[in-house]
Length: 253
Image (tube, rainbow, N blue to C red; front, top):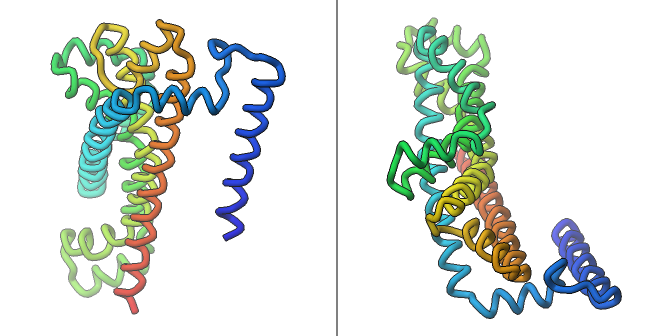
């Protein structure tokens, strides 16, 4: 209870100090709006902002699913084949270190479809944690267990599905939790690029639009929605990990 109450009280204290400082120092809303002005900006156009949030969420979830599928598939290939490992690992690192801001305009032009191009950009950002964690989990099987399976004549497929995959599930879930936040970041970055090019979609476009019109309270409202969405995604994936872990422990008992 204390762990949940402390951050809530701290957040309320920060908001109170923020609002008090804005009032005390007469800070104009176009420089730094207070929490009350931000809430009023949201209430002035809730459908617009929530509709944009749904567009960003659609890209984020599609990218997260694509990153999970591709990451697991590439990790499995690396375990099954040394040639696949040699071919895949360098390119995975290249994707990780390449700034998405630099290649997002090219992807948007090449893919053509606005939604698909945003998903591709977000998938590139979210791919590596799932891939790297799953690959590490598949390789962390104790040597004595591998020897035991081989002693009893288990095939490579049996070793993979009955030993390596169960051992890799906690690693996969940890990578998925990281990728959830990165998928949202990738979606927002891609939307910024697309919004600059005239394609209206998502909260990032609303932030750009509000900035151009000097509607700073609305811009902050969109930023708050993004932050809350990121927290919700992280919490949901952490809950999923706990449920899976609890199910695994119950199965072992």
